[in-house]
Length: 330
Ligand code: ATP
Ligand code: MG
Image 1 (tube, rainbow, N blue to C red):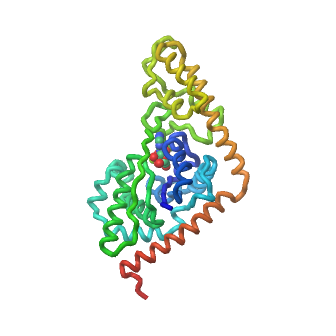
Image 2: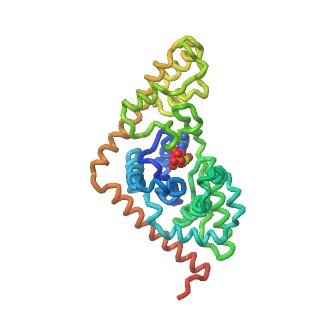
Image 3: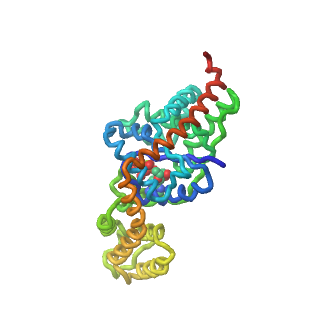
C-alpha cells in the first residue's frame, strides 16, 4: 500500500472552512486508499511563532480534535508529532550537507517569507530541508499539496535522488499529489481564508458566531440596493454555497443565483440561507468534537501511539541512511 504524508502547523487550535475544503476532506477520502500519515508540524510552527510557544500545546490538542471530528480514523491513520520524532531533525542535517544553498534561496514559497525581514531566520531558511526530512523519514510515496507547495515536494524529490545516487537506494522518490481545489476566499473578500488572517469561519465556531460572520461577509461591492442586479461569479457568499451545499440544497442555490443576478433577492436573505447551510454542515462536526473533548487523554493517547509507530519507521530509515553513508562506525 502506498504511503501518503500530510501535515499542519499548530498555529491555531482549530481548522477553518478553507482547510476543510482544500485538504481535510480529501484526506478523509485518501485514508481508505493509502496508508496515511498525518503529522502536526510544531517545529515548522516555530519558524513564525517562536514567540507564541505557550499556545502550542493547546493548538496541538485542538488540531487533533479537529482531525477526529471531520472523520479521520485513528485505526487507519498514523498521527504523529514532529518534534517527538527526533530522527526527522537528524535526517534533515544529513540532507542539509547535500543541499545547494543558492537553490534554497530561490525556492518561491520560501522567498516571499524570507523577504519579510523580521522572519529572515536560519530556521526559516532551513524549512525546505526539514520538510524534505518529514517526507523522507517515513519514506512517503505521495504528498498531497496545493499548487503553491509543489516546489517543496520537488525539492524533496531532488534531494532523495541525489542521496540515492551518491550512497545507494534508500529513499522511494516522493510524488506530489496536486489538489485541484481552488482556494477558499476569506469572509472579508481576500483571496485566501487563513488561520491567522482574521477572516476565517472555524469548524468550532458556534451557530451564532457563524451567523454573525456570514451576515457581515463581503459580497458584491457594486450592489447597493437589493433590486440592483448582482454578480454571482467571484462572490464569496456563492463560492461558499457551492462548496458546502448538499445535494438537496442545489435547487435552492440555483434559484438564488438567478434571482440575485436579476436583482430579485437581497443579500440578507442569501446570507441567512448560507448561515443555515454552513450550520447544517458544521453541526455533526461540532457534536463529534464535543463528545471527543469529554474523553480525557484521548487525543494524547492517539498522538502518542501514532508517534511511537512512526518513530520506529524513522529509526529504521535513519539506520539505513547511516549505513549507506558509512557512518555506522562502532
Ligand atoms: P496559517 O495562516 O497559519 O498559515 P492556514 O490557514 O494557511 O494557516 P495551513 O496550516 O497553512 O493553514 O494549511 C493547512 C492546509 O489547508 C494546507 O493543505 C492548505 O493548502 C489548506 N488551506 C489553507 N487555507 C486554505 C484555503 N483558504 N482554501 C483552501 N485550502 C486551504
Ligand atoms: Mg498557511
